[in-house]
Amino acid sequence: MPAVGGALSRAVFALAVLASLVVLFAPGSDVPSAPPGVDKLVHLLVFAGLAVTGRWAGIPRTPLAVGLVLYAVGSELVQGLTPLARSASVADGAADLAGVAVGLLVWRWGARRSR
Image 1 (cartoon, helix red, strand yellow):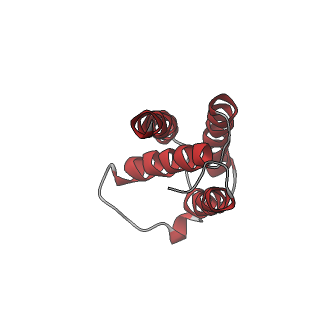
Image 2 (tube, rainbow, N blue to C red):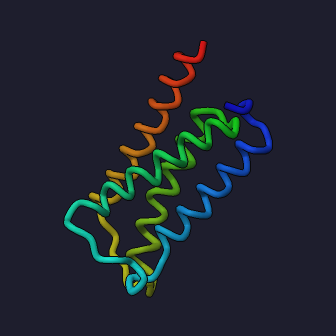
């Protein structure tokens, strides 16, 4: 894997952020229907991906975690308070936070294995 903090890792993190913006802020009419619970899995995977790619991009763990927690809360507020025809959900927020934790743990596990 290329070095932490290199141009490739920063580009991948930027793409992950862009993908999260599309997933989290698409109007309700653009969100495909899915079986119950799939949306929670999507939230978890989006935030796990942000955490892993953020660490790969060289962002220190604590500032990244704080930023992602704020992003998770903010995204739920935006979904609930704007005319996106989306709803704020405590369960989605919990899935976001679980994703942050999973992503940071996966990064730590991978970093330990590579030593």
